[in-house]
Length: 224
Image (cartoon, rainbow, N blue to C red; front, side, top):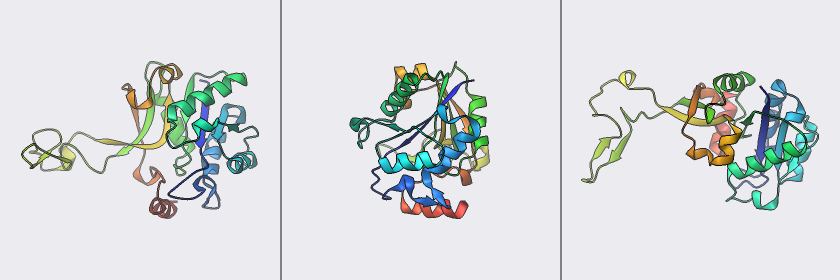
């Protein structure tokens, strides 16, 4: 297996200024994703894609000598993850890197481990669109997740609503954003959200935190 790791890190962050290089447990936030990737592969198979000179310098300090400076149009709020990944894949190909799967590691998931990535790699095959880490969903559509019906009343989202114990409901999963192992050909064909052949790779809730707000940051520090 020849994976290509892609770590996207934009300089702008509205909720937490300079989030990707803000110290988290003694290291810049992005460093945790870089160090996890370096446990699994060499630096030439890791693309840190950024629009920020500061982030690029941090990447160099943590073992990525040639971070990729993405085009300005891919550093906006409207740029899609797919476009950023395709640009990074093209950069890897220009460098002569051969790969058979793309591993997306978002810096906002610093509590993921190399074992979590290995589990996702083991679950992936070229016959699927991607293997993606998930956590047990806090709300189950067969038990305690409801929708408003046309008559204005709450109705359980799925099923007949007669279950009285959560453990009797089918498992429900929530994407946790920690690891995506994606088939390159499928990524070239469609957006990530349109991929239907997705293999779930469970992770525990305490490592599934995706930092987006100052409150998320505080909670992640408590778990870390």
